[in-house]
Image 1 (cartoon, rainbow, N blue to C red):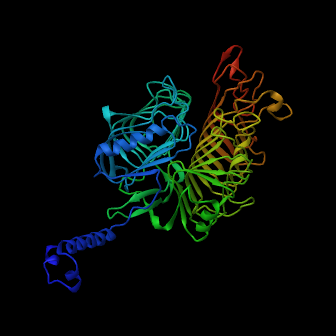
Image 2 (image 1 turned 60 degrees about the horizontal axis):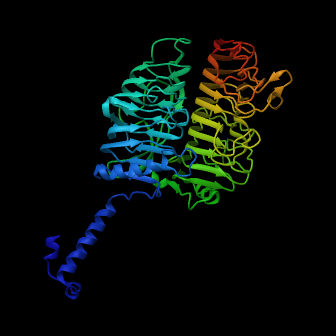
Image 3 (image 1 turned 180 degrees about the horizontal axis):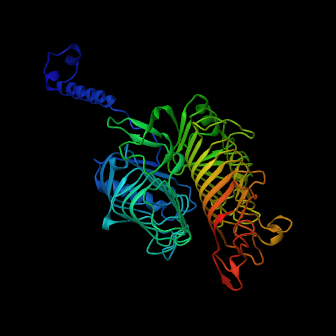
Length: 587
């Protein structure tokens, strides 16, 4: 710059003071330099992007500010994503409701946090049974004291993580009710403690301790020792078909991209042993970045029709019509538990019967006018073959009531063949606002009409008829957790057929000839007397319909589940005593 300033003055230079001229040259040069670096995308006010060059105190202040909003906000409206660029950080990260913490490196080890990253019980007495809707993805942690606390229940993804120490899945021995771990390494011990149920897919650890009702391990190279029913471990050696969740990454040049992992068959262990997860990279510029304060279903659909992929920034999107995903290989992603909320009695989102569509990281929240369904995969009558490039859903969550008025006939309906679901919680609220048998209406959580649908981590609770109704052939479920509804007021209101009390939680259609499921836990919490359920699982008696490792539990003093599967297993009550019936194999 000095050389430039020292050259012979031009006519322009003669018109301005020398100092001002040099300052202008410096500004122009800085602007030119900045233009060479990719600009950080505008992800809205509720996405915080951290750089390792920022002072730790500045980062901590912003994290603490968000946690003060989200710590107790079980049914609040705020949504946040905390994004960490590659590098080293020395901070404490408490993870509250509707808060997603993401590393932006190609591998989890590219972002390293030394300190605490923790999820704490949201109820008194270390009770984490309502610790929902939060996520940690794509970074490594060296926990203070050597132990990371991750006390969680439903709708809490733990993906592409590296814990350089131990982790516990509870808070000081308090109750917790289920969770998810995938594509993760824990160098030390995973302490399940009193966790009621858990699924680990394609993860690795030094050791695992603890068991309760239903623990499932799929594609885990070193699962814990022991066999069902004591301890209640269900182990499937290989993950038959899966595609990991798409994720944001920022490369060494500062380019923002989305990594879309490859489809894998018969896999064991994590994807990133050799570096970046295999897959394709798509520039974030190929995505339309939606904002809840700006966009409607119409503006989003217009961008999808132009061929854009879609990224929802955190917030609540009120929709007067469905979002329509029609193009093969479209990627739809949400940050910070972005929530889609139909307001006019329509679906929130529908897809074509097209190859390779991926939907990830969204909360579907039923609206005040009853919808026919919240998310429909493929139209009714879909028949395409997607074996080579399946439609995949990752971390899609559903809620009917709790945060406000909500009603739907069904939540997730899958019509397309070969669809993969990689973690879902489909919840009719049992607490919160506008909750009651005649208020937050929802007949079914999941209806599967497509053939060869595979689901990992299926959590479905409290709907008023079948929680799951599976009509397609060739279906597979790896881990199922379900509470049947708490609130049937009497048996007459909760009867599916003459002589049958209630509606089975997991129903396989009478015409299905091929279906298989591993690791199922079904629980009752009846609030009114003299209400019972005849059977937790109802299936046709056919050789190709097979179930492995089932348990039922009555969690209150009223009613019972009379059998585990069809007429097998026996009741959860024997006189004044509660028991936990188990069935190892069916038939």
